[in-house]
Length: 448
Image (cartoon, rainbow, N blue to C red; front, top):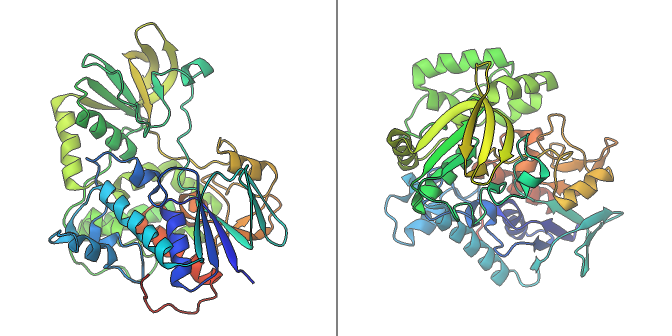
């Protein structure tokens, strides 16, 4: 019987896991966070005031059984027509922080928040967690570590990686420090993280040149006002070529945004039923296109980005980095434009890695995950997107055995569920796992 659950990580996934255990009248929980801002994580704690959510507030409730919760919270603070708004991420962080504070205040001894870093853990009829200065014991543990930092691009040697001109963490507070208006910043990646960094640099007064480089040079598309349409009732096929045909056919009838959005109820099941070969084909050929159409920008963000492009301050190019050489005044980038045979060079004063979060356990520098993978307690999923788990979020060891006392949540379970990086999906996952750990047969929508 599970009486105590240890949750490693107090970002969005871990915080909701703890809160949902309380809501389900489940086992007591210990929430462990190494950072200074429990409850909000990197996505909402490192945001600049100009960064807004990429999803309308009406679909950002923390609870799948109470979809209006966040909107009511906003309305209680004076926001009118809140459901349609793209609110600042810092506001959403405040919402999550208040949820955690309320849970701690009302939980008695059922929820404990611990500041510290889990260095290692072992399972043997329970879980023992090593925090360096103390040891914790629980009946089960949940890994809620969020997104891992991006992998460093090829061609950077040890000296370059240590250079202040290279920022491997796009959320580091000193990304814009020391830049002048005559400088050029190379942003590697053209997805959502690039958009955040470009707008942050502009908001902090940088007036120099920005160059965003990725293999295909694709940019996220823009949200438009929601419309009603007759949605699909049956799960589409998983074969990549047929998937593309279906999307194009539906896009002609209902628009591409609706054609993509109507897949949402089926995406996890489609991924789960696809063969490894089909998944690999999707990742190799369709993923970049899917990402820019699926993960869209708020109109105001898209318009700000477009103004940067139109003014010439931001250039978006397609190509591949080949090598980097640091000189006295700059870094010389050797790169090859997409479709070209000859390489070109570019001089930049700063490089920011915005290639997006990665989850390959075989390349991670995250100490806990590295130790667990080296011992065979965890293994990567077949596509090396994250931690291999079953459909109950139980982790799988290197020998294929299920770890019944060790679970994983959030983006690091992308290999099993694919669509598990946004709030609407993670809130359902945390709610469902809390339900299982609590032996709850149903929950009647109770609040905290």
